[in-house]
Amino acid sequence: MREIITIQLGSTANYVGTHFWNSLENSINKIKEESKEVSNSNSHNDNNEEDYRDINVFYKMGISPKREEIYSPRLLIMELKGGINSIKNSNPFYQPPVDFDTLKDNASQLWPGKIETYKSELDEKSSFQKTIENPNFEYQKLFNSRYNSKSLELNEKTIKSWTDFNISYYHPQTTVELSEYNVNDESTPFGSFSCGEELYNSGYYGEKLFDENLRFFLEDCDQLQGFQVFCETNSAFGGFASKLIEEINDEFGRHTVLIYGVENKEDNTILSRINKSLCMNAFNESSLLYIPLDISNTNANNFWSKYYSANVNSLYHSTALYSSVIESISLPFSSANNYRSMSDICSTLITESIKLGGISFKYPCKNTENCDLLRLYYYESMSNMENIFGQQYIYQGMDEIQEFYDKYKCFRTSSWLTKDKYNISPTFPQIFNANELENINYFKFNEQDDPNKEPIMTDIVTDIPMMTRLACDSSLNFIVNQSYKCLDGYRSLVEKETGYEEDDILELRENLKRLRDSIGAEDENL
Image (tube, rainbow, N blue to C red; front, side):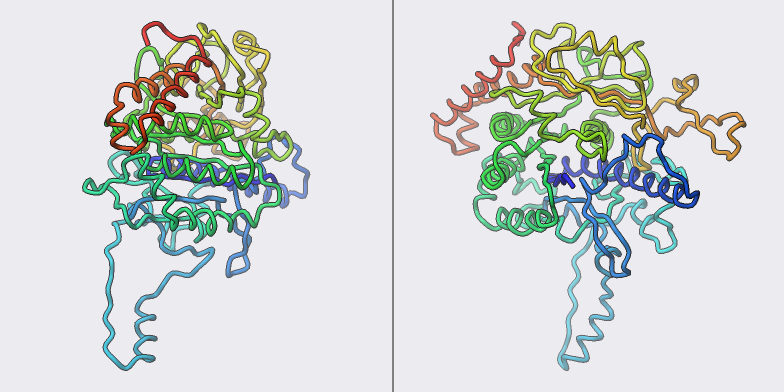
């Protein structure tokens, strides 16, 4: 089944993952609805058959206590204590809700003595979670009744945690909570790269995550593609991830792990920058491909589009953009018929010494007009590229743009196309500017059964054509040079925070310098 197991480490990574799984839930619902329509009409659905998504790649199939076929993500989540309190504490697919009054009554019948009850305070659930957990709420309507983040009251003010807009039901083996470190606890922060390394090496959490939780999902895999990791890189989760990936490589062979590095922009301390630099060095050496993600609102980055405006400092907004490009990149991995493996695609981009990738994207993207891509961690103009080692284009809901393809083509260029647009999940922030979209006909849809009636315009965007570029090229020089300068400029602090010997720190700096020079196209102002 070509399974991929996803691992999410840290709050920021879990924001990305929540958007990712919510979007896949939306896609699964569409697949189920189309299957029902085909079944009811007794006709063969040959429309867009090549684009059919194999949901078994990312999801584990199971049977509920009611003997219903259910799907849950092949997923491991690690979070600090208190970070998952408000998530569903019962899963109707795997376990019934706990009735504490009944438990107390049963205990009183077995024990004649005094019974004392202790309750720990749970975080207040968001209004969205209360809505979808209401017994009268029909879960299926969340997807097919045109709900959206506005009608569900999901915005930057109402969302305090990734659990506030989570849709998915997770398997009980998915979540691991770090009891030693609390969310937002400044007195004992889970702060340094080496702290994460030590936590993994100490035994309990490393063994639990790898030998218990991870092996549980591995036992269900017939033909494992590899591992997809969302990692918070500016905290100690980077160090924890580095040790976890080392063990995965020892067990399954090197280069089976695709890593997306994400960061909380609110945490911009010297220590957080050191952590990101250490992640850059560790993940370039141990991963199949390492893709750092960041949004910078600068003129050079050309981020803003007239069709939408996102708050790059909002985790809810920025991680939604990250998630959309990650899902786009993963389409070839999970296609049932037009399949390309994760390993095949990544290996066409990298070199023996460079395991870095950068993502740029655009939506809406329909034709060659204004087709400059919006870059995540890109600070140079693509037209000034000195080195393009390899690139992969993903076209969704649009024809391949031959002019664009030819302009930046190199000997290691490939593309993947689907007729399907990128589907906007009900919890995706409505960042699109309706006034700019009025004259674009692919934002119209027909709510009426009569196809001859005029389409009705809506200000709710449900799907968009999209183009994504994954590449290993010289624009990545900027971030590598940042990492090198960080370790070079804060040598004493690096030694203090990591406990590394001076020779070890010197080796880290030299590794990053060689990586920077290998990528090439160094700006003289860097």
